[in-house]
Length: 606
Image (cartoon, rainbow, N blue to C red; front, side, top):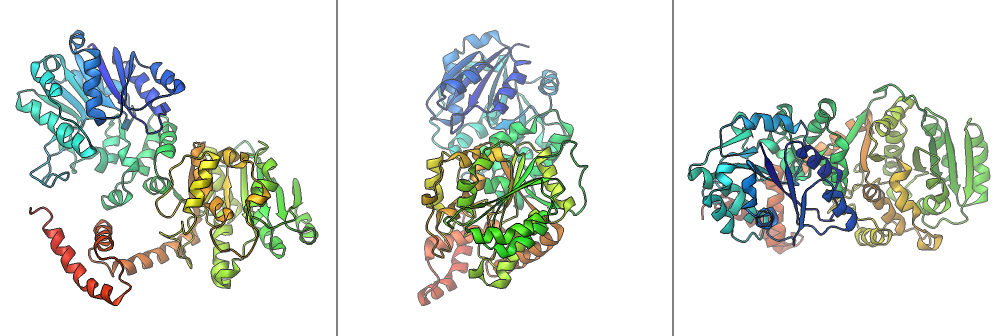
């Protein structure tokens, strides 16, 4: 069967990722002509990259979404020329694949006597969620629709595209094309088939809501939306993309790093972290055998509080391999105090560097005094530590924060081996850190504090393009973490100077040091790496019970049980009633629940 494929490409940064190239290479085995229409402007490098796997490349202005991209591509190619083919495919960039061979897909569908077909479909649902009216029809999803000769040569098909209305929004693309196409042509007497038949699944949208079952049934594609969609939606429907990623890694030939490389560049970090469940609770026993190759490890530790050296060295003694130790401190006196303690340990190499100043606290010593270490390429992995007391937070809270850092990074020899195994088995893992501290701290939802604009400004100076989280940036709060030096190369290469950092004056927030703490993960993702958090089993139990209690307490004070409804209600309150911290606000509070409840019930009644 002779086939032509019109492939719609779009990327907000104009970057052609490897998953695109692989997909088109595998498509080539079954398609004679590949026409790529790009809604993104591409530079010379990216254009040459995609031109190497297609026959025709056509770049257009990003208007009309994929719908008008298809329309203009077919017009540019010429519908009269399509008569040389038996099948015309309209497909786009919104999925990864082939997870399973395209051969299975095309072989199965060649046997189906139909006029058009698709990989997946959405069931009919009422009311239509995009406009609240009538119903959303059963429809083949527009990321892949194949049309056979008897249909694409028809006047009906040509009229459909000639009369296509303007598409000005994502909703337009659904309501004026995707949800219309199948019904329009089936009503005209054309027959269709679906490879992943939604009638075999319990949900209305199998490629999202039944993603695990669809993958196990050898669906050849993985929708990107399943990985970047609203985490609240995925939680509400018990959708776990991590399970799918692990299944693909174990059972498919598809390179999982094609997916990671795109996600770390295009998805908000905390959304990616949440949707892929990127917390590892590691046991105090080996998860897998130690690697044959001994990793080259360094520890960079800033010791402002020299009296903590024995405590910190006891944690470092859990590292199961030889390591080099670089200590920074701000006075010769502190260096001399620490030398006897450090000398007790049989280290392959250690060095204590005196910085002469405490500007930038732990951050300036890292990026100024130890820049040579960071850029030396001598080490596979580096552990970043510092003496931590947090006296401004009180002894008990500060002690817990310190323990949260040390014991989730250096809990035991086996635990650290498991941390290092994560790096060994995941080449794109760049940073491993404890989860956000929340016991004793109001970090959740508020940890940007006054630092976001400072972070944005420095990211621009450094050339870090990773999108910033809306709230609670994914970051190593407390400034301690394991990392792969190449993941922080851009950040370490920046010409930091001591004078860039504020003079120490007891600041509790808003300094460059606080900004750098929040930039670490963004810098790694800009280099193409992702971050994971790790906890020991005891810490996980402590944190989960506190989180559960805090969430249930907050939820008990908000109408509705589902988090999505609670969020919608709070948005409504903030938008319509403002602050409640007044007597007038208290009176408003009495009306909110009733008013919002009535509004919610009338939502679809109009």
